[in-house]
Image (tube, one colour):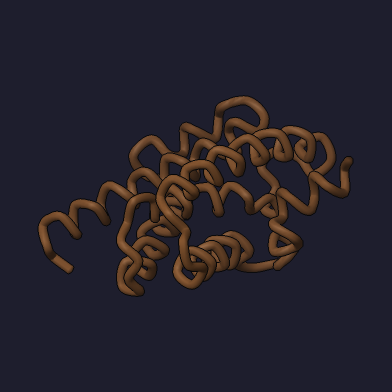
Length: 149
């Protein structure tokens, strides 16, 4: 079971990248979102729910081995990126903007994002990236709605 948790939490090993594992995991999701046809918003929602459940579970299990919020756990970045692209039209400029916005919020952790890490166990691992994804989505949706793109 531990090996399964590691595979899920590291997104098939991406989390073992020493520098930039979170960015790499988010970028892999962007690639899949952009290039896999039929990735409807409803499928995205179902996948997001699955990723959130698996993320909380695997982060809680691996916390006992790797310590609190290990950098090897990158499923949280995938979840945040999934949120940042939710209900966004498929255009390359939107994907790039969503990735930049998400990573900005995830790395700097402003506006209450940092405090989400205080939640217990796997919840804290996932929550800061969820909020980062929400902020990125809100800004991107605003830019698209105001036709600033």
